[in-house]
Image (tube, rainbow, N blue to C red):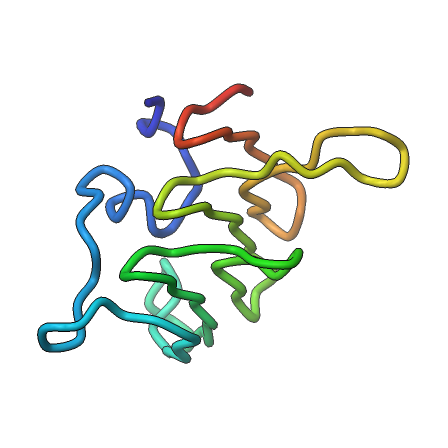
Length: 112
């Protein structure tokens, strides 16, 4: 799995691949968090979608949605997007830098 140069902000969850727990139950549903950006200058809001303790996208809703437009698609705790756009192009699993950077992943393996 190529994680060295990924712009995913949650790549460590894939490396560990252990469910995130709430007490003795795996985390499920949506979570809203706010944290400082990478420069420590501004607060960034984020919506995370969980299923059985893992980041997970469902019905075209990203697992990670951030107010600075950073978006990530996950499947059962692995970066993953096998959907195609209206022109038949594979869609990225990670959209970073306001859409300027795109990464394509299938089942936790980077394909470009």
